[in-house]
Amino acid sequence: MEQEQYTQVKSSIKKLFNIDLEYYKDEQMKRRLDSWLVRSQKPSWSDYLHFVSASPEEQVRFRDYLTINVTEFFRDPDRWNTLRSEVMPDLLRQSPKGLRVWSAGCSIGVEAYTLAILLDEIAPNQPHYLLATDIDRGALAKARARGPYNNDEIRNLTPMQRQKHLDMGTTHTIKPATASRITFKEQDLFKDRFENQFDLIVCRNVVIYFTNEAKALLYEKFTAALRPGGVLFLGGTEIIPRPNEIGLKNFAISFYKKIG
Image 1 (cartoon, rainbow, N blue to C red):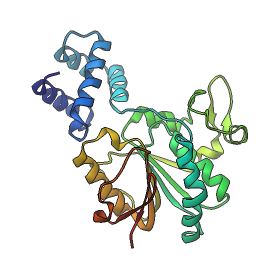
Image 2 (tube, rainbow, N blue to C red; image 1 turned 90 degrees about the horizontal axis):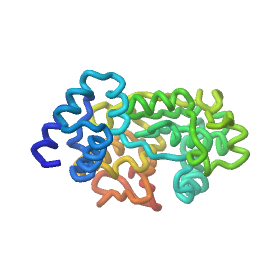
Image 3 (tube, rainbow, N blue to C red; image 1 turned 45 degrees about the horizontal axis):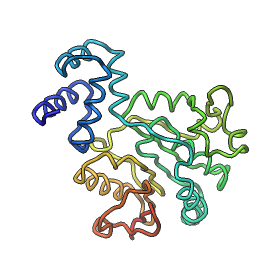
Image 4 (cartoon, rainbow, N blue to C red; image 1 turned 60 degrees about the horizontal axis):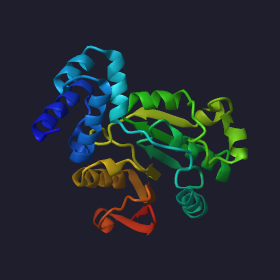
């Protein structure tokens, strides 16, 4: 896709879906859009955009494709073990009456449900506040519906975790008692105001699709949403350059603490 055409497509997508692709890396998004056009079997973007503007069903499919959703319970188990054994106990000592936790870019809910399972195991019967947000309405609908989730997505769950938190079948859904602990909301990370005073913000494998300028903006907003001493938990390949300049300190792989 040539840059001029990409600019026109971005403008159309913003009008149709209120999704601003300026925050995403150009070359990566161009490849993704080119792939979708081939799949749609339309001869050009003008044909496809005319088609999608008249088809609510196609709008749902295209929106779901634009907002990338690849996830599983306890993705990168080593990082979650660090959260369980080192980070969470320290946060609970600071906030013994319960934690304020946010899964930002929660996709289909797997990360939020992972946090609910973890909190149930290490600090049960406490009134934790667990917020989960995403811009993708289709993904949020699946999260609110408690699934279903496939075998690949649940592969890191232990038999005990599956028994306690899942209704097992050909595909698997989260039990209502576990789902009731989470507040799901639609949110644009760049445009919407954040809640604040979080003990823990989890945003894993989301910012890798964004430009450096968009990442910098988002990291500053996350820092402002943390309480002093609160922790930001990122994906394994996501690194904040010069974190001290925005009030963060890196203390383990994927983990940053708010200074002060």
